[in-house]
Image 1: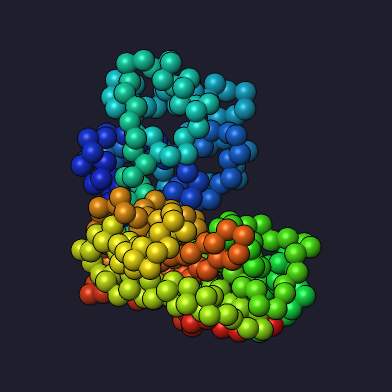
Image 2 (image 1 turned 90 degrees about the vertical axis):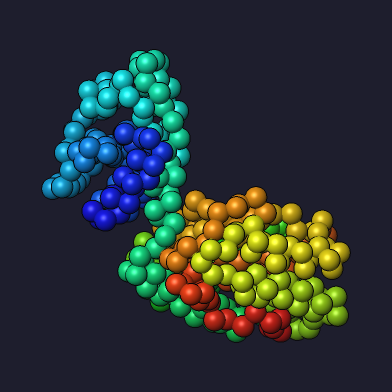
Length: 357
């Protein structure tokens, strides 16, 4: 944990931030090993480049021996007042992405001389580069995902509902030791697959000739997995096969260039240019991928506007798709780890189209 905090402090110094309020519970867990679900109550870790750090805790929270200066308060206390006693109101204060307006605005009103600045990337940038332990955890989470994806491919049958398939996936995760899902499992049949974040229907049944798009992920030891595959019930027609092969090739072209130093916009271009040249640009209007870790979507993305470069230890998705409203959609998604000299795929499930049902 000390090494992680040191990396955050280095970034704070680079940005000229002497003090930073970290309120994201997952970021606090990342830096301290302590997990609290604060609800509406104030909960924050105050980091200082001086090396003195303070954890603000409501008496409701059941934690002890944190290794930090602990400031305790109750629901009857003036929470902003408690905070003001420990921050330097004459200096710049960095805040992170989850610091609520109900705390930020009163703090700004009561400390008009204090400058507040965006400081979330000081922590998020460190979280984006996984260490060896995190990488092994995420690899195992992806092994579970691969196992369950293969299992569900054999489970799917004509006449099943989307919800029935999604429930099967969620139950299989628990059998494999996962603690839950990274996000609500997405199962789409036919035209529903053109809705990129579709909610599985309890009544929509699978028909022969339709696609089955499954986007799924589980949590293992606090870290997420994520993968998408598109299958076809009983048969696949020529158009479906051609579009699937196009999307699969786009994934593989993007993955092929991933290595340290490559810009994320250039990774995106490998897939986007291929799909654009095939005449499907209007059917894919989102970024190519997102970072992942303790959360399914974390700081950082693979997009045309991200000029940052890949670094060893980063893990992100590659997931182009083509979505034909009223007909169907095709998406194929892998997680990719940037290594010292290239990359490693975290998913092993075949990306080629497969007949199920």
